[in-house]
Length: 367
Image (cartoon, rainbow, N blue to C red; front, side, top):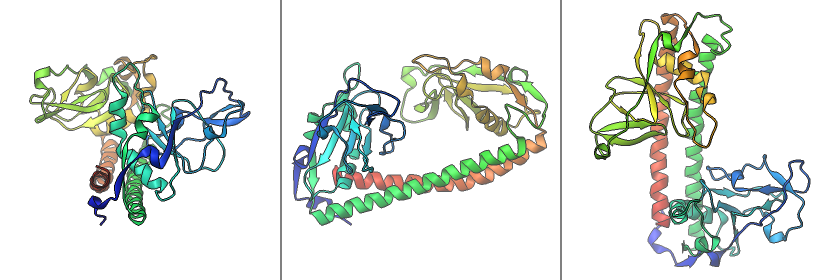
């Protein structure tokens, strides 16, 4: 194990790397004329770049704003300030304004080591970028960050250790996705497309067999750190010592980026006013776990209201015609899902332990 107390010194990031903004391009085109442009939207949340959906520019731009393999790009403004992307491609791109360019100038420090250092600074970048209408941070601020510099051999070891852990995390995530895909495939195999209903199952409108209710706001005095989880439009958000639902139910995001998304949740819990939930349903007609999977396949998020604030009403859920297979067939699918979920949960536990190890080492190496 690396002794994190034995770093040689602290160096400013701008001593190790060039740190500056991209170019303020004036004209773009979508006809692939000129050079492709990397914008904030091309930086993904997993530390990679989406280079398949670029606009182009024919402007004559200084080569310092052209990409180089090994560059690290950071979003300097907007809702995703702090996102990082690593340039792995040798093809030439132009780096747009508000994308920070972090380019190594000291060969004794690896690009991978700087990548992990910057990933550890994400929360700091977000904190320093807030405080105005649009989050914003300058390359100068980032360039002043102190980097713990170890002997070159140890920095390579640190990068290797962290890269290996990242590979394990990706492996576990891929396994979880395969389990999810297996459940979806089994559903389609048994029931077909529930929107097209090619199997000609009988159907029922939502209003004929369940009641969908809006949640209630959590009073400020109930927003505590222990007790019953509260489910809102964007997931579990805080805790309360009382509950609105004692039984398992289906919760639907009503407002926020999860509006229209459907989740089976285990009670007791409080459903906030940013969500809706099934408060009553006909247990003779539907298995609740099956109904949740059915709703997920319908993809109700496509009924979100247009506008800056994502939201959805009860109407599409209540008017949609749901397929109604026999209870035996529903239970057969649920039994299959329960068995697959057991394996999925074991992988999920391993994923969480690996993430904890990653976070612990990132803290040890970079503070």
